[in-house]
Length: 118
Image (cartoon, rainbow, N blue to C red):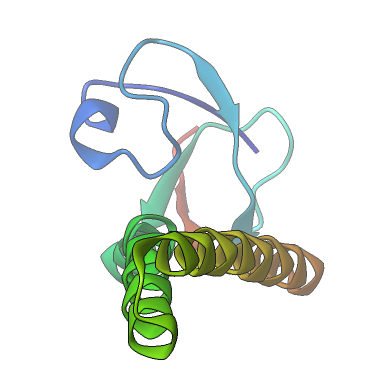
């Protein structure tokens, strides 16, 4: 479905529109039999947004830290530790890319159409 941003979008950040008046395409489960062109009420669960934020922001940081401490513990110097932290960062990005592709194939989404407005 296509969604126009509103003032509530500035607080959410779920689709990165930010309330700027743009249009985004969102996949949503159609529970109400809405048809193309209908105005609908959309509901998005907070847990999916929190989980996505954790994956995108925290996993890479934890990967860098794990790579650095593992590299420093194994090799005892800075250059291998930094190299291993960069490798772990790349692996975390690869993991996130594969995870994103798998979710898209499953068509997993957190948005639901809960009410047809017109």
